[in-house]
Image (cartoon, rainbow, N blue to C red):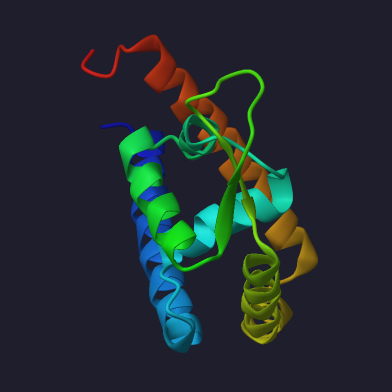
Length: 153
């Protein structure tokens, strides 16, 4: 393994740790709302991207359609998302946040502001911008690896 490969492996470990810590933080912040991190992620997708089908959400998150369908079913049962017509495909409705879902997601975002503020104060702006760009670049490269299907070479 080259030096650069070792550094990248370390970056991947740190990203996994960060992901797990964000999941734990979200669970703590929103436990009383009965919204788990996966539900929060789908709500965020609908809040920022508007009405979408289950396959569209799954593709954007690079997870299985079945995984997203399970989450959407839970959100729908809780009255947080509703199904709308999809003229392009009768069997794949567009899902959107209900009024209750929009209000709850606004609460979620409000609760997350203070931890965001505290964490952002401890890191210089340039560092955060650079980290965001590096993660975007890594995501692009990883997506290319997935698309080529040459993962075992």
